[in-house]
Image 1: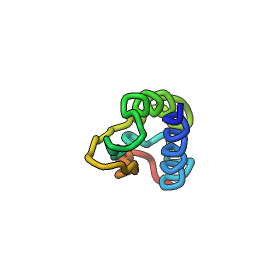
Image 2 (image 1 turned 45 degrees about the horizontal axis):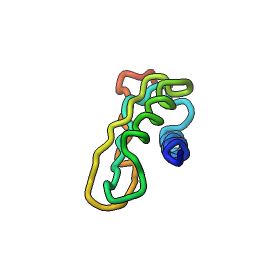
Image 3 (image 1 turned 90 degrees about the vertical axis):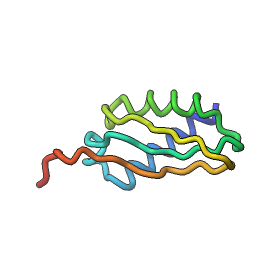
Length: 86
């Protein structure tokens, strides 16, 4: 199931952008999925839900947007604005 590998890479991208300390505050991960690609959107969403519901994430959810074409990309990361700052 290569969707699990893709989901793991999406999680790595999220961590690279928000940092390990920001992961618990991550709310949504937006992903554009090309319907002409070799990715099964339902399987990718299932894998992302499983990974994002566990530490170090815990409360993030995937938001998939099906598009024409074959691209797969992270489009946005939503962070909780009420997170404490140091």
